[in-house]
Length: 172
Image (cartoon, rainbow, N blue to C red; front, top):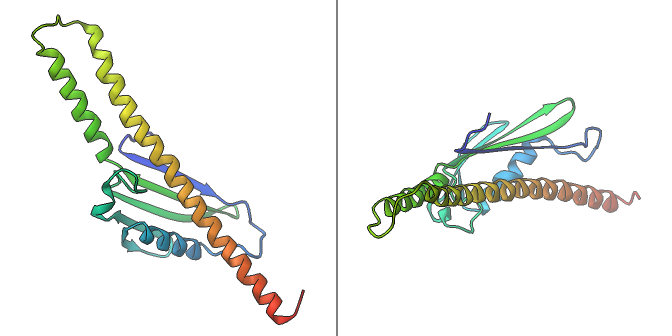
């Protein structure tokens, strides 16, 4: 079900038999460290879940968590595949475009010089959908890429640490 005030997504790994595959807690600790580097405040952690809120200074455009009020990241294993799911609450995304749409309707309705007609309704509605939908899609793609890069970086660091261990022991 689509919730316009939440961004949801998940990533699944295909490395079921890989000996270098990390445990879900290792992926979560890598994501936790990356979120803290992005000024997120971790509010609750258990074995398979991270809840976080962005710091107040990260609410401006250009930050990864701009417009997010809170988020939850969980890990689970489904048929030997690791699935990392996330849900971001984004109530701030709707406030700005909604305010601009109401302001545009108000200005059009009470404009003295122009005749009111129904064709003017489409401008604010399209503007609202453009601003809200654009921000929604940008956050969805940016957070998906952020989680994917963090997971890949954690797996690569384990691969390099395993190769250093093998080389240090003299086994090739």
